[in-house]
Image (cartoon, rainbow, N blue to C red):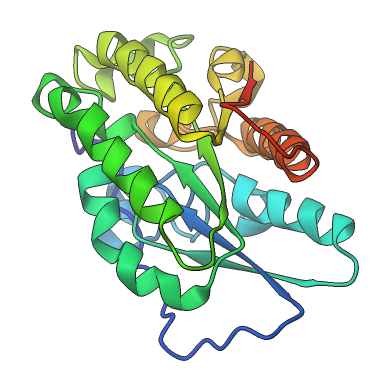
Length: 245
């Protein structure tokens, strides 16, 4: 994927965190859909001026915070805490997994694929993604893992200007790989492709690059799909590549 869409906010500072027995820790590793910061350039060029999943009106309405609130309502005797880890392409996201083990996460949400959807990076996506998921599975806390599939909206003509020309082709290859690895690694997979071309799920923002992202309604779809997967996996002893389609 070209770098037209975003930069990813600096990772959360985890060095001073001490988990207590009542904490339920969720670690989100994603790209701008999960968490996007802002600076003078994003304000000037994109009209983007706050920190949240991109195109959400605020962090309260992005999928990470919506999902966390849903989990908190389910786990009344736990204190649910969310952290944002290193994201982007899997070969970059893996860099901080060792440091992120200090969080002792109970759940890791891996959202991505968008930055690999070009000829340059798709060729290595399978091996890189497998290494990332394997590294997370090897964390001492043995976290549950939910993999969220790639976002590929084609419903608005302007979106063709936001990504590499081969994005559509590569995105389909990436989702297939994500599904296969989820099955092989026995983790939950959430497909967001059913929501990507619904007009109500995109189109918010002052710039096409922002409007490409899931808006408040799209974020709600992400959170509901992830929560359904979480409940399924939580209540299933053998969650072999669970796929929500």
